[in-house]
Amino acid sequence: MATSNADVEQLIFELSASLTPSQRSAFEVAARAVLAAIPECLLGPGRAYCALRDLQRLHYEYPPDDLRHEGARRQRRSKLIEAPPIGADDPRVGGRDRRQFQVG
Image (cartoon, rainbow, N blue to C red):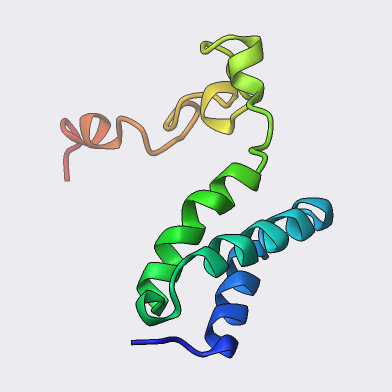
């Protein structure tokens, strides 16, 4: 099943959307070269995607991982860590125990 030129262009456009402009142009040139190497009779949407997905990963630059550089035990600020425990200073805490011996 041969794919149309519009399908290929749409696939290249979608795979290059997450790339920066300089990465995008290099990816588009490389993508067209890879697709030109595949015989037209074998080129379908699935085969084109499989050929381009690994190429897209080669052109993508992952954002820096701050945790890797500062150690795995680095803690970010969190309300759960910094706030007092739930129930502290709450007048309803222990209400059942206080009413246990009430008369009336």
